Image (cartoon, rainbow, N blue to C red; front, side, top):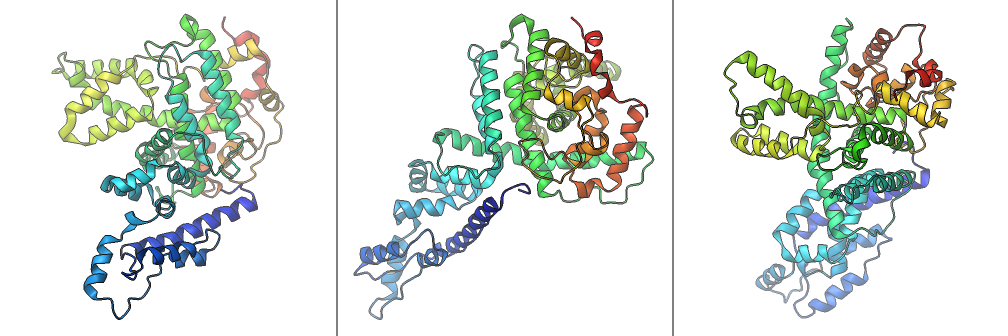
Length: 502
């Protein structure tokens, strides 16, 4: 939230303070409200009348327990306590309480009580409040992923529909710095699916991704004979976590929009030319170069995990003889080459399910079945050897000319590091690693132009504080090793007509 406006920060602090107050109240709810047996309805009405959403002090009075009169026996009080529970509260108060529960607590509560479930289904406020509180500035990504994932039929998934969804997301992300609206036009089903994907797929992948990139940095440092003195896996900062989660969503969005399924070819038989150029234009119109690199870091992460999954499932997937070790290794290599790109494009749902089954040794058959259903032959996707390769960069320039970003890149426009700010819908705050690589000047190059080794440790996710350790030395060592000192790839924009293929 580093780039948010002051009034937004005040609003967020108010939300956090209110949430803490409600959590304290929730603990008191376990002891039910005790009222006089002669006037339960009157006492409840009196309690409701004291409630004012604008006052945290009045919020505390909502659950103050009136003292028992001397005439009220302990047995009667016990009976009333058993009859009065949260389920007996008015719907408005019931909804308020549900709105401040975590996703896990809310899920447990509605599974335990049909009354809570009916209250939840009676309106969208509870789920929408949970989404805006949990995702905050990630709401545009989450909604775009859900909506793009609903276009499943080949007939509906046309290049025109894809262009419309890209534009809708591009416009919505421009509003990511503003407070989310208080209401939504989304359906209950959409809201529940957004929450489920966030909590069951995205968040579990964050620590796995973090461990992967931190684990790869020492390997790269060792190649450069660089001694690391900082902890190999320190806790990530809020900025880094936000970048990682956003990149996971954006990768999933690319899978929905650009993943080429066997029976689904939005660009027809001209996919290799028109399709690749359209995808490249969509990527550049929607994201900045370092944001595309963030997506490609996730792409590298996914591709790094699938060989182990293939290896675990290969005997069940390929019934041919694996007794000879050399033969088995060769066939596994062919299998990986043939299926890796297409299966990567199936997205994070499949990866999450496969990892879960692979780590559960008792369900090997389920892993085999999952992979048998979803293995996809190699197809065009966003990888550095495909859509984001040198070839398609030159073709895009030759077909459509220089964009505004290309002109800024060609001119080496000054573009220094200005701080770690997320979200960054206008592309004003590149990560420190990006400005180090390009010497504080603008660049619109990504994909095959960038050494793939840098993506293996997630260089664009690191904030400035972490980058100013030995990571900076590793970054510059790899960068200088990949390019001659007197050569800058941005100086070759004029060669588009020569380098393009037709």
